[in-house]
Image 1 (spheres, one colour):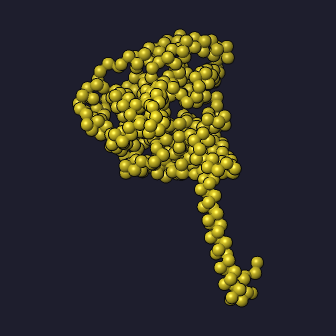
Image 2: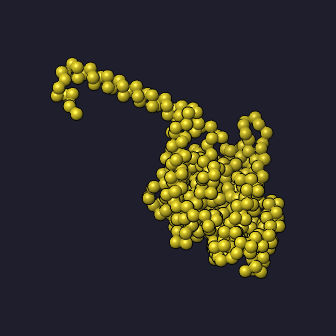
Length: 405
């Protein structure tokens, strides 16, 4: 291509340069207008390889510092937040599990779910199979990232203005392709987003739709999916695990028929399940991304959010994330660990020795205006009726599995 500088006079060249600058400025304005009307979907940042260190392994120490202050400023969310602070036993169990994960260089991601899932998860645990997803379901990390990127491209090309800002269209992980490949989690436990906090799915709560609206009650022991869909997937988890271990389909169906009444009993339980997934710090930015409520990426990496938490600067969109449910994240060599906080035996086995020092440290930050000693004493009391009810269901599952196997 010929150079205009060599074959064009100076006055003509100056005119061409001026027109080019105006054209670039116009295109810049047009791009800004387009991005405002059709906002781009941020990247997921799943290719990050930066590791984290220090207190960021244990984000709840920093989250607890500001929980009381944020709590007092969220009048609309007091239902869930009050329920959180009113459960020192649950908090103490979580803190000790998270501390052990901290020593193993794991970052705690928290997931709240219906107690219906405990039946399948406890049953497949007896078969030494993954608790979170079907062991017969195979999908690579590259495949999940490809599906997320394809969704981002469709959203970027959508004709509807403000498409990515309309709440009903902001859901990414409820569609058939990604529903079984993404797990909704939060970084740490102590959050003020009432509807989306893990303990909201466990304990329930209330929130306001607007400044002049009546409080909307949110039940505990719930999942995002409808109950019958959860039950169907739970049955599939058990069937796949049985067949993987060499059992016939008829034997799996027989086991499910014996566990079926426990599904109904778990659905009627007043509280749900709280799972903590310890993800290796060296892999966190490859296996999880920071997200909005519906699963859309925010453009922040999990590492950036952890750094912000350490400095007391929480992201405006909250601390939600999505964990990839793929072969790499739950393979035996992955290093990922899953603990059910509601399972007393599992918690005691994991922490081995009670760590009262870390519990006191967190309680002093959480209960700034309360009697910390009184809260610590409450952790020593016998388990309440709701937890005992879950213990009873767990015992029945163990009896059935012991007899069947």
